[in-house]
Image (cartoon, rainbow, N blue to C red; front, side, top):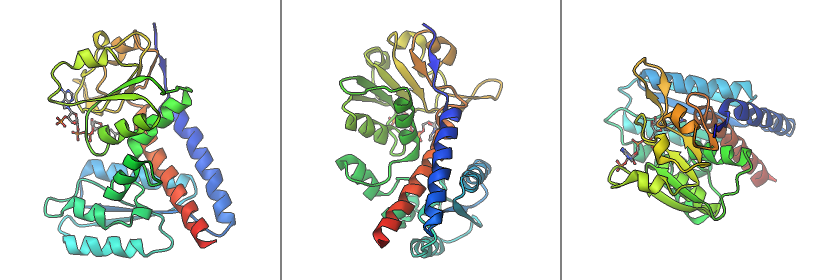
Length: 286
Ligand code: NAP
């Protein structure tokens, strides 16, 4: 079997066009969706990420502001900025780029964001909403994975999904989203004794570890759907995922490449969440 690729760039293109169209409708009603991105310090990777997020907003017609601060910024000053953005009616989404400098308590800063503007979905209220099936914002990366499954018309009901990784931003919310769609879900992590025994049972595998070749062809049931969240560098320094793409492509039915898979979907879902936040703000005014 040669797996079909789920093209994250093409799907992102479609979804961003829809965001742009919906944004134009909101603008005609007098409301422009707005995202504030806050960067503290000069981490080179973070600088690239925030630039891409702001550009994606601009391309889709959203209002976006990028606030950059020195790494020496105090926690109190950052909390004050978040509070000010919470009260800014032009801002519907607030994203504080992680990691933050060590002297700042990142969780405290995330908890200071108004959950109604928590478009990253990292606030404890957003996590609770996902857990209980209440309205909130879903973290962008696993939300993007769900959109990729939807794009191939995959019905998760009754299927066995294995998530490798249990971080608060990818693995755990991914498992909850799959569960919400009636999959039977197994979560694997670094203390899992026989990863292969679990993955071989899976109809859907999501790899979110951050290590190359965590998933190889011998670990995949023929016809399984494989989503690769990992972002690693290979020996040549090129971006690669957690999955042995060439090998697993011979066994799986669908697979996401790296790059060009889950990565672009993450920013796309940030736009989707910001638009949704603006829509909620508008209906609250009516
Ligand atoms: P993380 O917080 O480091 O979590 C990694 C998880 O993998 C942990 O739960 C860890 O288990 C588990 N793990 C480590 N070694 C393992 C092994 N040998 N077998 C099974 N599980 C193992 O990372 P993250 O933030 O979730 O990110 C995961 C990967 O996705 C990274 O490569 C990251 O760069 C990438 N990522 C990509 C995007 C995107 O937009 N494409 C977004 C976010 C993250 P323990 O809990 O037991 O330590």
